[in-house]
Structure formats: C-alpha cells, structure tokens
Picture (cartoon, each protein chain N blue to C red):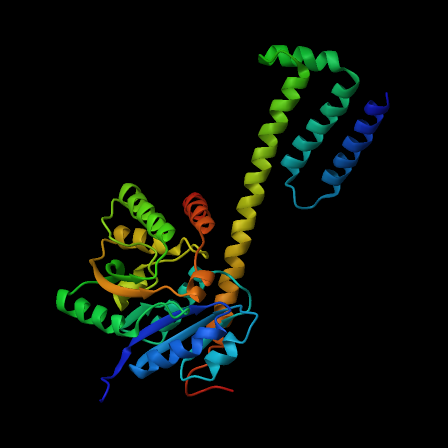
Length: 110
Length: 229
C-alpha cells in the first residue's frame, strides 16, 4: 500500500507539472496526462496491466513497463542530446560573431 | 637577404593556452611576410596578450570551443578580409614556416585547390612510435570510410585557395575537423596534392597535442556529427 500511495503522489505530481507546463502542445499535453492517469489506474489494478501485456504479446505487466521505460529513456536521451547539439551550435555562432566583430588588426590595436 | 612579400597567404593559427610558443611562431611567420590570423580559443593564460603584442590579426573566442571552431572562425575572417590563399598552422611550434612557401609553390606549379602537408612523405622528428601507429590506423580508416588515398591525416598544415576555403565547412568544433576537411575536399571534388613537410615533436607539443584517447573522441565526433548534419 505504501508503494501504491508513493507512486500515486509521484504520478499526480507529474500530471500537475505537465498540466501547468506551457511548452507542451495541447495534443501532447492530453496524451501525456492520459498516459500518467493510466499509470495510476494500473498501480491499483496490476492484473489489468498483465492482461494488457498479454494482449500485446508480452508475458508480464512488469515486463511491458520495463520495455516501455527503456524505449522512452532512449528517446528522451536522443531528444535532449539533439537540443544540446543545437544549443552548442548557436553558442558557437555567437562566439564566432563576437570574435570577428571585435578582431584586432595589426594597424588597429587598443 | 630580402624576403619576398607573401601577404596574400593568410595563415590561420588556432591557439589555446599557447603563451609559451605563440610569440616565436608569430615572429617566424611575420619574418616570411605572411599575414597572420591568431584565434585565441578562450585561453586562460596570456595567449591573447602575446598575440596582441605582435603584428597579427587577433580574434578571441570568449569561450573555449575547440580547434575546429577556432579554425572555422579564422578561415571565415580571412575570407572576409579578401585572402587569396588560406593556410592552417599549429601554434605549438611543431610546423616549419618554410613548408608553407614550398606548399604554395607546389600549389601554383600543379594548379591544385588544396595542398596537404604530409609528415610521412617528409620528416616527423622525434615522433613517438605509438603516434605513428595511431596515424597509420587513421590513414587506413580514411581509405576505407572516405576512399581517400593519403599518406598522412590530422596534419595541421594545409593550404587552400580562396575558392576551396569557401567550400570547406568545418562543423565539428573539436579535433574531428581534420577528418571533416578531408571529407569536404572529397565531397566538393577539390583537387589536392600532398607535399612533404617536417614536423618537430617536442616535449611541449606532445603534451599539448592529441592523446591516444582523443582519437576515440574524434571517432565519436565524426559519428555524432554525421547524425546531426
């Protein structure tokens, strides 16, 4: 019961974060809220998760959660790395612009 | 002896914490009447002050971005200033200034777009054996991946015509830029030749240069760079 309560509090917290986040598109927001609401449902009805897992072709509900988590984790890492590379390139352009703009020439040095 | 005027050759020198050797390198380049562009890549020592005290164009990255990014900045600047020929040159004193002139002569005689320095056609003084093997592995890698037959790779001494320098893009900020330049030469079907040059390995240049592990980073950068182009 302690785990179920902890998981519920955690999932509700995530749902609140998503609800008040202004960076998500409305469609993505609804989808994520639905996913986490389903998470709360399956915390209290694990046998239903097993049925869903068997329906998809996975033996156990816990295995299904593990596979989904792994895929989500890899996806998140790629998204964040892509953002990191983009930010780095923008910083590089800015640093280059400043360097060229403030170049000291042999005849003009302060 | 009167030196000929080589101001039309712009020598781009990326420098990161090179206060020990940079002054001598600039003096040697200026002695041959070459136009010098120093790109201080966010050094924490007095590299910038040393460069500014010399008759060179001095650019400063406010952050350390890496040698590839510093080269791109210097090349872009040189092209904006109207450079006819752009040369890349290391700041640690391992290159010889006279090699630039022989590379330029070879470029004019053979009418090529790019001239790449080769330490294995020339001399690599005091080169550690481990470095020879790593470079040979790199040469094999380039032959397999890019289909380019070269005798040397990752040599910082290169000379490009303006038209070639405009086509060569360096998007990798780190050390993978050397492979990227070669890939760019192939992509744009630029004519190139290799010319013998002499590289002097010193305790200082070995300490500052690439380690065995940096080759792993280069492979990673090439892979990631390929993914995010």
